[in-house]
Amino acid sequence: MLEVVVLGVLAVAAASLDAVLAGGPGPFREAARLLVLERRTTPQADRLLARIGAIALPLAAALAALVVPFGGHAALDTRVGVVWFNAMEVVGWAAVWLVGWGANSAFALVGGYRFIAQGLAYELPHMFALITAALAAHSLDLRAIGAAQGGLWFGVWMPVAFAVYLVSALAMAFWGPFGAPLGADIAGGAALELPGPDRLVFLAGRYGLLAVASAVAVPLFLGGGGGPVLPAWLWSLVKTCAVLALLVWARRRLPVLRMDRFVQAAWVVLIPAVLLQMLVVAVVVVD
Amino acid sequence: MTVLFWVLAVAAVASGAAVFAVGSMARATFALLASFLCVGGELLLAGQHYLGVLVVLMMIMEMLVMAVFMVMYMMDPAGLMPMSMVHNRRGALIVSGAVFAALAAGVFAVPWPARRGGPPRDPAAALGQAIMGPKMLVMMVIGIAILATMIATVVLATRTGRYGEDGAR
Image 1 (cartoon, rainbow over the protein chains, first blue to last red):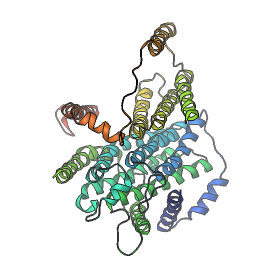
Image 2 (image 1 turned 120 degrees about the horizontal axis):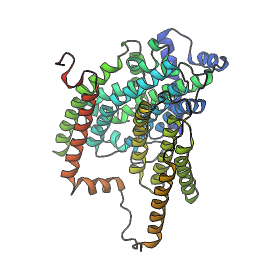
Image 3 (image 1 turned 180 degrees about the vertical axis):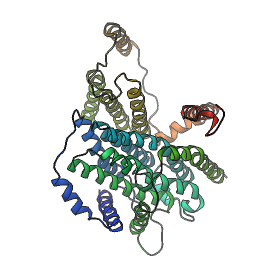
């Protein structure tokens, strides 16, 4: 269970780093502000669905964290960690859509639908990137995949899959260039009408998802706990922090993508590129 | 284990029934999703970890896509006005009652064979061997056909259609 707690701390650290980069209030002040914010309601809102959506996001991040290995140990002993991570990350689709739908507000609904479009664009390249790493390691177990990269990191000899994974990590947390579902052009999108505490839970889940996606990149593409001198769990932690910092930093460095453009780029460029990458890896591995 | 099985089983049936009792398409969709998630939980309980997680993964994506389409085709697109999820009540009751009776009769009437062999060490690998080994050609053809269908559907559904941004109209 320690791994899940560590990822929770990393999520708070990500929020702090983002606050420093943006020059805004830190996560704890922001949390306190959200908690005392006056509750606002919309007429005929589907409160049950909106609340399920807000809670589902941090819950999914925590459940996904169960299979994330630090060093060679994960909280949950399962051989299908890659599929489990994938399934929990898809819960984000439901969460954002429910939150957007439940408010009975046009802009929130637009934000919810934007995330479905984004999901349909990033999910297939994301799955192919996951499968590519699993294929090279002959395993769906994140620990086994991390341990299979003794000589050369998967991120080095399958750079396309790694790049696609990083893009999809940003997209699944609707972060930075993929922040259109919560875009300023639709007044805050899916989260527009969320009351303070619900918004706190929802945004915490988003940081959690970002932390988990960063941590999973380590066993998939960055050699897991491999490295000189330091113990394996510390190497995992250091690499996770590096990926997480990169993702947080990217938020304000890249423009927000228009959804139709991203869908087109995903289907026309990313899917063929990652399929070719998988072909290359399959030929190398079988040989 | 047995307790968990029954909890999930009752929850699956109850949320399946809720699909027809709730008043909005969004709630109906997510009640159905809850039912499928319980079924995925049952598979996990049965030791089929890969299949169970796969059911969870695919059903969430499917239900979200279904929600988009169902809401799109509704006479009340916002879906916030309560509407009945039940149509042709008497016919549906007769059909579903007959199907249930036939299936339940089958459960008791069929002489079940005794169990042979044990579960494999790695069920996911055994499943992969079973469908990708002797049936490899079929799986490859189906896989390519599904991908081609998806891409063709997306291309045809876009505003510009198959002619591209500035194509012939």
